[in-house]
Length: 237
Image: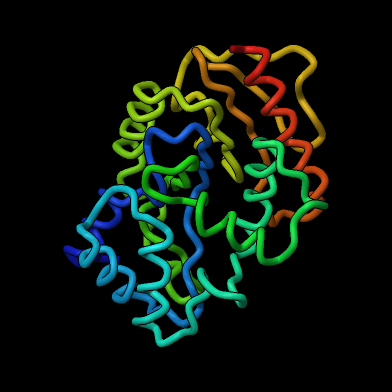
């Protein structure tokens, strides 16, 4: 399929949300788009261009603007704020890592956590993807692996120049494995859980997991992942 210039630019330059210097990274294969988006990602590209065509956007700027263009109720703010199923599980990890017990939270406090700490510029989390093009049921013919070597190289440089405390790599295939980031990873003795395998590369802990929406994992598994990451990072410091 021939891509437009805007689609090609997004595929090459856009990585996700947050801050490269954030201590907590989540790396997936491809962002999920909204069902109302067109197959050409025209609305997403329009928002991306309007915000400066950055490699990382701010969730609290990008997603509300997407909602405005698609004429949706803003789902990132207000009492009706929701997140996609993938991010629900990953936010469990982030809260557990920072020692926030789920039984102390209600809907409003979870919403506040999302708005303040999830994928924000100058924030604590970096949410990035191997593909720069979001996936919809209508655009499965868009190439998800476009510029993959260049994107691996860019992500590798960002990881090893910023030294995040951890990187959760979820839903990766064998071709998208940790070896693309470093030839030298150290297995951490007695750290693996039913959900995750852990490796250390320099000062960063990598957790290799299934996709959060894959069958079989529970909320408790993802909370345990956050707690295990906190322990491993503390032991390494």
